[in-house]
Amino acid sequence: MSKPSWTERLFGGFKKTSERLSENLAEAVTKAKLDDATLDDVEDALIMSDLGPSAAARIRERLKEKRFGLEISADELKQAVADEIAAILRPVAKPLEITAFPRPQVLLVIGVNGSGKTTTIAKLAHLFVEDDYNVMLAAGDTFRAAAIGQLQTWADRVGVPIVRGPEGGDPASIVFDAVKEGTEIGTDVLIVDTAGRLQNKRELMDELAKIRKVLGRLNPEAPHDVVLVLDATNGQNALSQIDVFKEVAGVTGLVMTKLDGTARGGVLVQAAEKYGLPIHAIGVGEKIDDLRPFDPALVARVIAGIA
Ligand SMILES: Nc1nc2c(ncn2[C@@H]2O[C@H](COP(=O)(O)OP(=O)(O)OP(=O)(O)O)[C@@H](O)[C@H]2O)c(=O)[nH]1
Image (tube, rainbow, N blue to C red; front, side, top):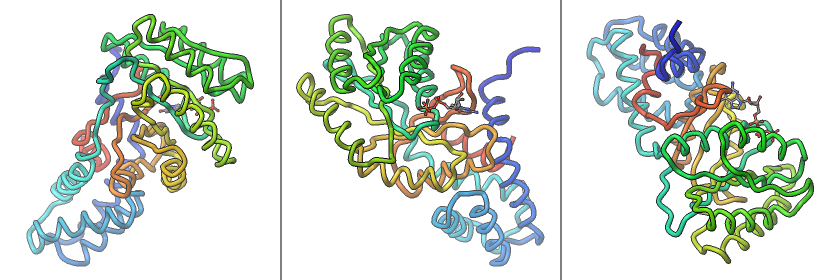
């Protein structure tokens, strides 16, 4: 059997989310014409699918403006909802671009333990390597020896160099060494793993501030990107992490992981609507090529359950 295409995997990954919304929308259309009762049901369906009250109300209003009193089938409704979801997602879809000069472009990757941070770093490295960039990793999560080992394994698998220090070592000095070494060997992108311990905001803030200070000495523009990795299966909790990390770490963009196997993919729309932060990519599996740049029209269709 041939390997499924990325689109097929995306549909497969989002299956639970799209089934939920698609069923809820189909149930909403019990009358031929779009009236207030149907719009209420659509709004409820969107909220139940984790799109959040604000995006749901916005989509309801847009549908009302465009279609009120007109005949609409379940399929047309799904398409109309997909169009509105795409309109919310489009402004935030922004792939990570390597534009920094001087190089390397420094990406700090943050997120709570288990969010998929390490895997996402490896997947991003793989994407950049595929685009012919020279990539280096820095093991700035020195809190646990296992985290350093895990990143090393991924670096070997992807075939990129890694700068690491001992467990409990100083992340800022590892990042400093990495930028120096990266500059010498012509690295385009330096991806820095960090210990995203939200349990202690102060410690995390201090650690990131120190990394920034050290980086700033080498290149005032660095870090160029502060990417927050979120686990979609955490639903609303993932969204509250945005609030905290925005305040603590100056997040510049998001990657949402584990959109496969959750019915909560709607949180992606909620995140887009509520925060307006760039969404760089989405993760739909554990394999190295299970991360792709974020395509709003495709994702909107998948969420609305249009094959
Ligand atoms: N299904 C699925 N699993 C994922 C995805 N991304 C990561 N994972 C899995 O989630 C688990 C945690 O991923 P890690 O990358 O180790 O997460 P981390 O945030 O670095 O966590 P720590 O290693 O505990 O700091 C691993 O088993 C990954 O394989 C995804 O998009 N989909």
